Amino acid sequence: MKKIIIIIAALCCAALCFDAIAEDSTSTSKLTILRGDSGKNLSDMNLSLYSATSDFGISGVNVGEAVKFTAPNAGWKLIGIEVMGWSGFNNTTQTFPSDRNFLIEIRDKDYNLLYKFADEQNNYFLSTTPPTGFSAIEIPALPVTGDFYVVFY
Image (cartoon, rainbow, N blue to C red):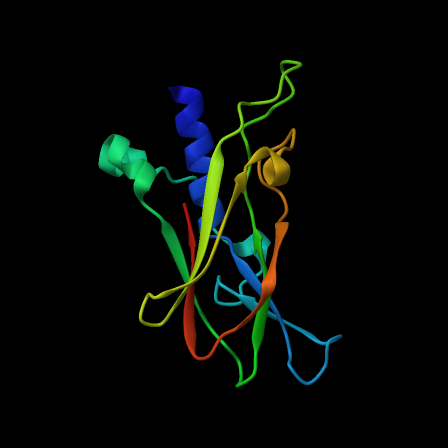
């Protein structure tokens, strides 16, 4: 149970450390990076592990962590997000942690679902050290206008 809570805590922490990547519709080689941390340098951020299960018990597994972004202009398309996460693997054993699924949703300002993606954590967050970098998750080009949310479960 402790291992599951650590994994959930690490994944929930990832939800607070999003970047959104998008391409400008006028040029396919021009990327705009939106920062969900108000533009602070990653080394200046207070990255605290958080587990929704500590606040909500087992029901916390169904709680998503959301980060709000604003599209910089009309015609802007979201093409990926970057997530900081860790699977809990610390190289003290020769086996990898059990794979757990995670889910990412993109929602508009009215919380309508625009895109949903699910995969296994070890494909993105398998590292021998706690989170030190971001894993990129590509999504199909998604036109976004105004405010939108990236939700991590």
